[in-house]
Image (cartoon, rainbow, N blue to C red; front, side):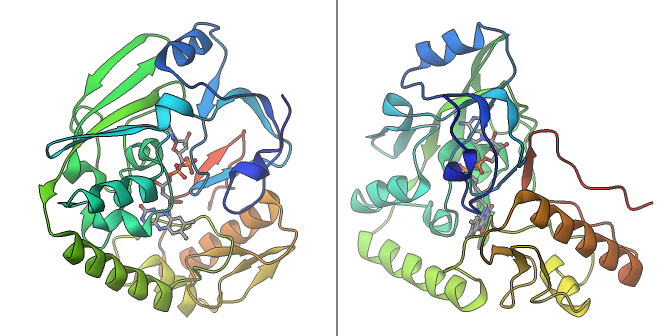
Length: 285
Ligand SMILES: Cc1cc2nc3c(=O)[nH]c(=O)nc-3n(C[C@H](O)[C@H](O)[C@H](O)COP(=O)(O)OP(=O)(O)OC[C@H]3O[C@@H](n4cnc5c(N)ncnc54)[C@H](O)[C@@H]3O)c2cc1C
């Protein structure tokens, strides 16, 4: 099936996959992996830049059983394709707290594990008990430490599919959870372009007194536009689809932002967004 992956990314860019597969069970994922062809998973595409000319891989979108959620006391079992928002809704209703931070992360459980997503002092590694990964070489259950989870990083590679995760939460009054989520969403709305198509933070925060956003703002990049992509006038560490953007436009903006941060601050910004389909940023030197 040659469907443009722009339908599966929050920025709304990206060409077709070699093949788009929608497995609904672990057995179906295993069967796809047995073909020994290169694969990648797309979750909510909220941290993803896909090449305009497409991806020469089988791209998996996890559905059915692989996006379901079960609660057992304070343990939550969620499929790799379960959306954070749906998990949060379920655990809030059940009076389980600790996942509130994820209200700001519009992805799936698999995507959250992949990059140890986090916000407002919380992150996946703190609530994950263990993660089930399937790959052509086998698979099994892994702890966050075994997956190398650290700041916006795991050791996972394409070909390793997060099919399920177990989260350990704590009892908390649903009304308190609701109030926390409301407060975090308000903070987010005040600071970030929540009503635009973006892929979240472009760069990881560098080891510097300035965050990536403040640094790019100081470089005069707010509102800078290339083609259909624009550095957000609200927060300089976001790129918006300002109309008809292509991935090439976003990449050109990222290259320009890195060049300016390096010239002005001597800092080599590292991208937080995942690049898929043989695309990369030009070297700084
Ligand atoms: C408005 C906005 C705000 C955001 N704010 C935050 C924030 O505060 N904190 C934060 O950490 N992130 C934030 N993000 C980024 C993004 O939401 C997170 O990185 C999220 O965890 C990505 O999940 P996803 O399902 O969308 O993954 P995708 O973007 O689809 O994929 C990202 C990577 O994960 C891999 N992947 C996805 N699912 C699986 C799986 N099941 N198995 C193996 N690999 C998989 C993909 O192959 C890819 O390499 C934000 C994004 C947006 C658009």
